[in-house]
Image (cartoon, rainbow, N blue to C red; front, side, top):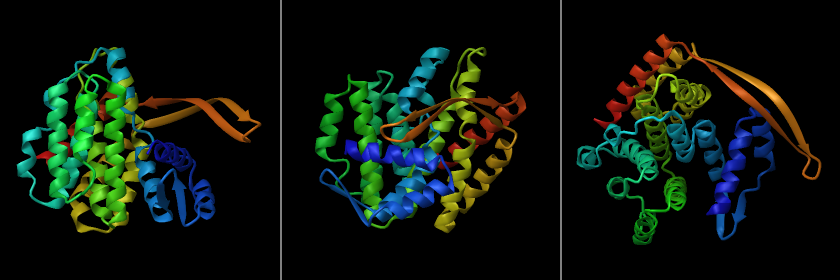
Length: 300
């Protein structure tokens, strides 16, 4: 599974480059790729590439934890979705969206020594997964590994990430793209919701809002990804997301390249630089209001 993550990471990097790189990659892949004992088909590669366009700018849970420490933000577990709300989600679409929400909540609680809360979120995710008939993912072995690694944050995050990817690959294998994309949308929106809901010193607030502003291209990619599904279940969500896109138009992203390093052995060039995010108070308040309303419409 680790090699799959490395492979996905390389796809994420390529996804940042635009259509030319995407075309080149598509033409180079064979119908199947073997990674250790796991076969990844060209169809799965395409789905992973599409998903990577959405998530490549998302801060990882570990990175967000670093931001929290730097900004001395108050992490409030009560802003997360109620793990006991699972019985209220009665359609597969609603369950899928909230499975994504619970995946994100589980990632965050895993980093802040909330062992009991983490197990509750894992239980909620497992229930949602069972209701969606996603088989062979939340196994007894996975649950035991989580319990055994409650005090090892890095291992716990790795387990959560692996479980998420196993869920996504299962849905792709069984041709259930709407459920897979609903989970992705729920996970992404919950991450953004947590970011705008954090309480921090006003002088440090810009660090968190920089991460929020960096989601501008990911938001556009998410809209296109859901539009491609051509499924009416996404219609209401897409209306709200397009409205959010309009608000994000006021966010200015100024990328300043500062370094170009070429590895002569691999003939690969890495670009280093800094991204300046310009966002005024009126825009940030509007983004926060829209994201909270959108997220609450998913979890209620």
